[in-house]
Length: 310
Image 1: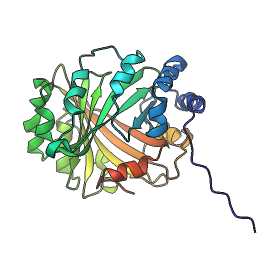
Image 2: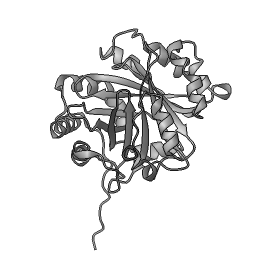
Image 3: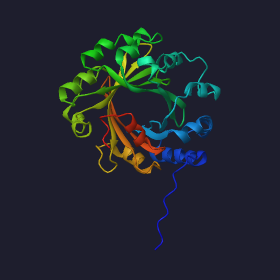
Image 4: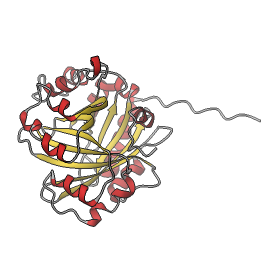
């Protein structure tokens, strides 16, 4: 009897990916620029081949389609962007990468890894730094290039027990930074209310909370705070449910269901994440991520995220 031939591992292909980006944008009616996406793929093709690549969008009509990669090795991602003219040289926010991407911990044993987030129309919109471990908030905020508008928020975070981070991000589009906290206690109505009030959201309802207890693991979950660098204002907060099973998801609405259905994924095990986002003036929406290639699940497991479902 003939034996089945094992499937060959998927290898990132730039031409196929461009088509996948265009088709996904069409499916969810998101803006798309072929020339911009071609420039991104040309500049970061090695990172896309070696890292873990995934999709992200929101349930808001007209919002962009993002594609992002997580690196597996130290790379100066902003230098690549500057050389490819995807980011202006000496961008005012680039100094934050200098502050956060340096080795830290005992004798500099922890070496952060840099990654990027792209919009299918706008190009580079965000750069992420994976710290390689849970880094103290005070260490993050005390770096020399971190402006007072950001560091002045530390007391608000400490009051909620938010004192360890695994990632930070520089949002060039919003002129902001993202702080990715690990919350080591179960979500509750009181805790959720205190957290969303950081961003001026004062209208939390039981329906807002309906899915969170079922999808945010009680032992640990990811909570993200976005701070405007110029104003120091907390623009939004988000609760992340990571590594969900594709057939067992919270309610995400038609646009995200379409994206999760239509966006290609070539990983042996498909990765899905959902985030609930809250901001001032009753602004709220849902965001979702889906793996494309590169094995994001093994990579996130390596980070030892207790709030990871699989």
